[in-house]
Amino acid sequence: MHTNRKDSMKFHWNIRTWLVLVLLLGVFACPSPVLACSCGEPNSPVTEFAQANAVFRGEVTHIREIAHGYRVYFDVTRSWKCISTSSAEVSTGSGNSDCGYPFHVHKSYLVYAYGTPDDLNAVICTRTTEVSQAAADLSYLDTVQPLFVASTSQLPWPQAVMISLIVAGIWLFLARGWLLRRHRHSPL
Image 1 (cartoon, rainbow, N blue to C red):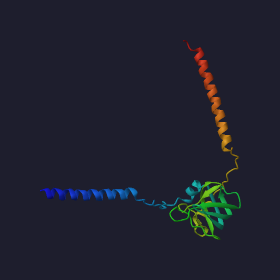
Image 2 (cartoon, rainbow, N blue to C red):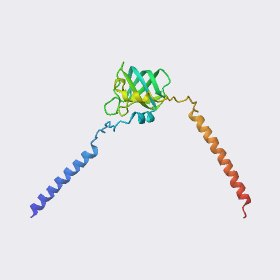
Image 3 (cartoon, rainbow, N blue to C red):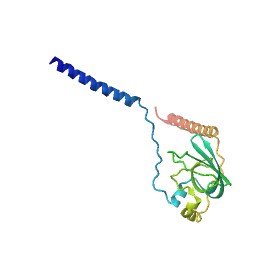
């Protein structure tokens, strides 16, 4: 019976060893994150126009590689939203799994871009496409009035913070005065 117990302990030790090894491999394994571009059904031209920050037609003049994709430069031939100059720049991903749009030099595109006027982005999940394939979009866009963002001079961040602090200070001063006045008129 002594040998059976010894064999039984040896068997348990082997299971424990394997279990520890598997757990250690799981802890120290460095799985690579899997990124995939997944797009739903495309929006209608009406919805896409409403949601995009910029909509224009232009020919790609050149493409420059940047840290996380490409910067694409356009000669704008028509703008329906935001772009009020004859040129535009749009960033896009590299196209591997980051939804980057595969622009090509000397081709014309209808671009639906997102972001700020100084940092527009285009991805494959929008209706951005070559002009030759954009008949439905162009038909709709011919019915809309172009929209351009008025130039607003925004306050620099430190100046905006200073104004906010001054306003907060005034409110605190007024609140303190109200509390002092209330305290003076309350019976002891």
